[in-house]
Amino acid sequence: MYRLLINKPETIIHKSEFRVYTQRIQLFLAKLTYAVSAWIGFTRASDRERIESFVRRCKRSELCSAKTKTFAEISKVYDNQLFSRIIRKPCHIRN
Image 1: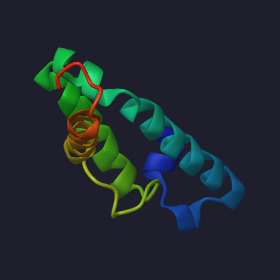
Image 2: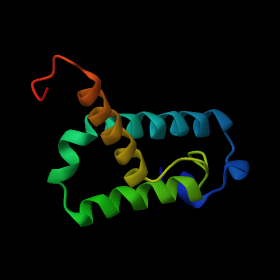
Image 3: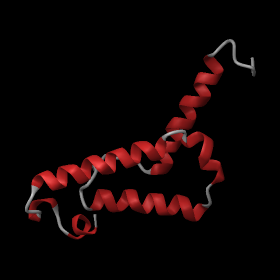
Image 4: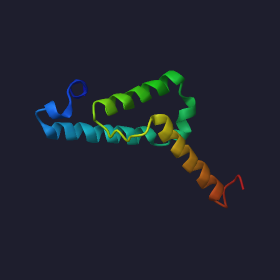
């Protein structure tokens, strides 16, 4: 991945290698957001900053789309979705 971070996509010899790394980044972000509402409260600010810096580096090196949200925004979206599902579910223990 270091090689991809220091080189721009147009300078990489094998475009297929770039595509593989892009897919791995997307998979990593998907795994990271799995159950984010449950574990985000147990992280420290330094942990969240490391995740944010990883996303920023991926954007800067064009490994993910420039439209990719920050991790804080992503976790907020998932948290809101979870909360709205709890509210809408009539048989939830809270109701």
